Image (cartoon, rainbow, N blue to C red):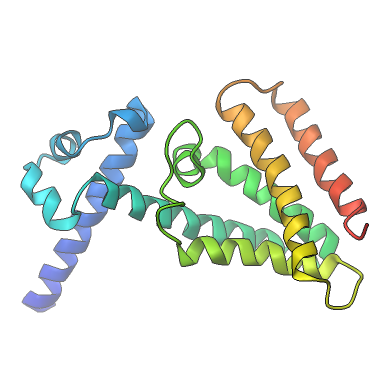
Length: 199
């Protein structure tokens, strides 16, 4: 490996370390505790070195948000490819969305502004658009009308999202009713919306 490649790899490793340290701090202390100084202390660098990679804390939050959507896309696609029936695929996709929220709780909080300000409104992430399109396209496929109107597809997407995101948010702030009941509510909601998706 040449010197240019080594330098590029070192820079990428340092950048990854900054992001990993940020997430560790958040898991230990919450999003409000995250600061450039704490990140520097965590990876034993000086604060100015952190600023060489990210202009400010917002830059770190934006990159973590983007990474969250990358992971979400992977999980939803994987779930979508298990079954061949479109309705079952759509159900599995929303369950994957639910599972992502709890497996990557801190990223979900950041992506969707649960108990904090999110970065989504400040910057349109292509990865977020792609995640929405996966659901839009599958909803369109489940609908029996040929070429359903975009407004109708959008309404069905937001019906799904508002119920599932609402249930996730309730649980992330510890107001849920226990895992078994929550999962039953989730399945009932998804199946109910699918049942009436063509109404």
